[in-house]
Structure formats: structure tokens, C-alpha cells
Image (cartoon, rainbow, N blue to C red; front, side):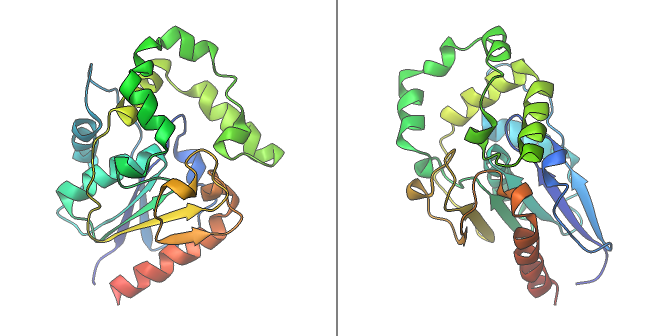
Length: 222
């Protein structure tokens, strides 16, 4: 494959491009971060994904990496734009692989009880729940959660619980940690398991994840 390779990144709920800073890629690969955009009222996750994808130059072959909720958005984009390959990290490609209590909360529509002000007050969400272990990881997670927009957070939580995709796109690899407590592995079917890794493994286990992704990219680019 000729030309400079491009990788587009989509971060997780309450996170931003900082979560990817420990990943290591060759200098000749162009790294492009798709920052969250403001959702439309009552917008479905799949419709939001289409709008976010307007920033992708799909006339040039590209790779897609989605983290946590960003992996769900990446799944929807992959269904439409057919990237060379999509990598999900600490995520799920289908609503069927979400934990039962996510589905239960969705059926009860508990998310509709949330308000932006309540979410803003609840920014004490423990970083350990998101996989933070070291002081550095906890500080970064708290900073990103603090910087997040509560209106976006309310929409995002709602969109996850109302997500109904059941199809796993072709050319997609799901990478998951077996110690993930946010999206426990027993409910999903990952293609690659990172042993001892939690939900924040994109940061804590960045070297191993980078190495695996580059191995796959090198195969596709040969």
C-alpha cells in the first residue's frame, strides 16, 4: 500500500485525546484525533457517528481506533465508511455484549432521571472504576472527567443505554483486558485479551497494545 498511513482515534466517555498519549506509532503514520462534537437533541449514537465521521477523509485508506464508548461510535462509522481495519479498545462492537445491568437500566429508562447539573455534581466518580491504578492515571482520569461537558455526558450515557447495534463489522478487532470492571470481559467476546489489564489499559498497557496494532497494520500494509 502506497502513501502515508492514517489512523483516526476516538476517545471514551469523559475522556479526550490525552488517553492515547502513551501509544507508540512510527513517525511516518499520521495520527488524527476526532474530538467529541456537540450532540443534537435526542440524537442516536449511530446518527452522531455519521456526523463525527464527516471529519474523516474516506477517499484515502485509513485505520480507526475507538476506546470504550468511542469504540461503539467507531463501530457505527466502520459500518458506513469501511476502513482498512478498526480496532476497539476496552469497548464492545454490539449492544448484546454490554453487561446485563446496562440493558436493565436502559429498559427502566433510568438515564432519563439524570440532569446535566446532577452529572456535574457527580464528578466524584472514582477513577478506579474507570481502571485508574497509579497516581498518574488517577490524576489524568480526574482531570478529563472534570473537563468534560455535563450536557455531553448526559447525552452519551443515554446513547449508550439506547444503542441497539447487533452487527459486528468485518475487519474489526476487539481488544479487551481481563480485569476490566467497567465493561467486564465475561459479558463480551474479545478477539484479543490483554492479561491483567483493566479499563484504562490504553494508557497503562500502551506498549503492548501499540505493538499488537502495529503488527496487524504491517500485515495489511505489506
